[in-house]
Amino acid sequence: PMGEVSLLGADGGTGKGIWQAQLIAYVTAGRTSGFFPQPPEKTGSVLLFSGEDDPGKVLKARLTAAGADMSRVMVVTSDAYFARTGSPLCIPDTSFAKYVGKAAPALVIIDPLQSFLPAGVEMASRNQMRSALLPLKALCARLGCAALIAMHTNKRSNVSGRARLADSSDLWDIARSVLMMGRCKNSTEGQIYLSHEKSSYSAPARTALLHIEQTQVEGVTTAVAVFDSRTDKKDADFVEERRVRTAQTKEDTAQAILNVLAESKLGSMPNTQLRAEVMKEVGCSEKTYNRAYAELVKSGRITKKAIRERDGCNRWYSFSDWSKSDDQLKK
Image 1 (cartoon, rainbow, N blue to C red):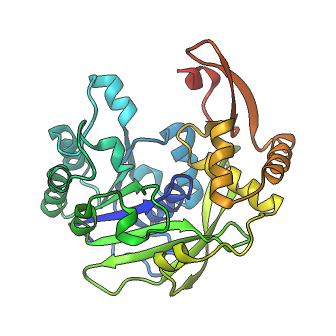
Image 2: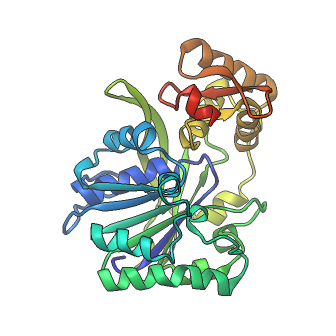
C-alpha cells in the first residue's frame, strides 16, 4: 500500500531478493506476470537500500533478468555509505530521509532491515523497534511512497506468521501488509511459497508458489523467480507440514546449493557453511550433497577455491562465476 510500510520475511537463502526483482520490474516497467497479473495504475522509480547484494555483481543482472527498467532503479549500499562517511546508514538518520526525498520513488526497499538499524537496537524491544521504524512510516506518509522491509526470520522451530518475524510484535503491528516466504517441505522441484499473511486494506492475496531458475544476462549467470501457481495454504500450513521424505534427490540438492549461493552476500560462501545451510534446508544426506556438489563443480556452474584469510589459514570457498574477485573476497 502507498504511504505505508510492508514487510517481507524469509529465511536466508529462500530467494526473497530474487522475488523482489519481480516486484521492482512491475513497479518500474509495469511488467505483468503470474505474481502481478494486472498492470499497475502507474509506474515509478524504486530506491533500494541494500545491505547484502552488490549492485554491479548481483543486482544489475538479477533485475535485468526480471525485466526491470534499470533507468528507474537507484541503489544505496550500506558498505559504500560507510566507506564514504565512516558511519553506518540507519533508518532514523536525516541522511536516509534525504536519499528518499531526493529520489521521490514510488517504492523504497530496505533489504535486510538488520543492516539499517541503529547500533544497540534490540529487535525484541517494542519501544526500540517502534522508535527505529516510526521515522520511516512518517516518511512514507509524507511522500506518498510505499516501503517494503525485507528481513531474516528467526531460527525458532515450528513457528509461523508473526512469531517468525524476530521477537518484536511491533514489526507486525506497524506494517499494513506482511508477506512470508519459505520452502515447501514436500516439493520435489525446490518449490517456494509466498504467503500474504496480513493485509489491512483488502483481502490477502492467495499464496503464490514459485521456483528459481538460473539464467544468463549478457554472459553473466544470475537467477530469476518463476511463477508456478496459487494455493489457499498459508505460512502456518507449510510450517506444520511433515516432510514426506527426508532424502532429497541429487537434482533437488543441486538446486538448493545454487539458490543459497544466489542469495549470499558475495555470491560465495565458505564450503562448510554452504554444506550446513543446504543440508538443514532440504534435509539431504551428506552423500547426496557431495554428489550434487561435485557435479556442479564439474559442470562449471560453481567454482571452488582456497582463500587465505586474515589469520593466515586457507579456507575453501564456493562461488558462482559472477561473484566477487579473490581480492574482494579476502577483504
